[in-house]
Length: 206
Image (cartoon, rainbow, N blue to C red; front, side, top):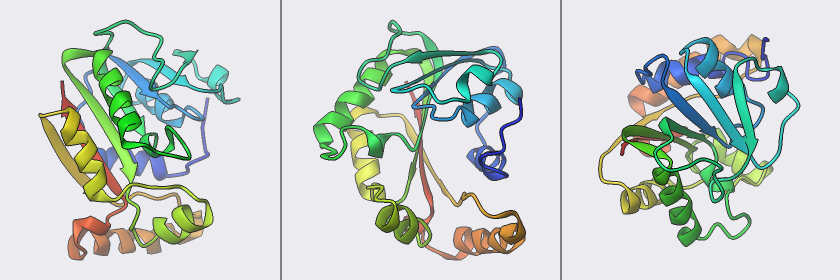
């Protein structure tokens, strides 16, 4: 199967994430959406890939090797210590909508800690509210209540102690603008304070 919904976005995202996944390990793609990330886990990283979401996207049944179940960050249909990796990509700001109560974010984070093996990793990627591209497009136009960087780090640090943070630019662009926006990304990542970069990443050792 070939997924084209994100063009070069997924490739760029995982390259910048720069995380060494061990092939053959088990990963849970929590809030998998259309399955684009799950597809990369299977195809590029050779992981035993499980995915959950509150609905089943039409692409899911087309992804060979993916085990999908209906579930949520609060109702994860797996026992404790099930996964070597748990991955959340633009999920946290959607849970408990529209209230987005801090207490419910913390509840969700504690639950995913439950299903992660001791010594495993939780990788959380969240769009940064005040990124120059995300704020007008995603926050104002599409009403995504992205977290600020300080809020994101605050809720992560309240639950976890071994955390590495990363910050980078990654967006889905029309093909004819790709080269222009790669120059934009270089400028952002090298000259602009990290508080404005598109993605806040938490790599958590459990």
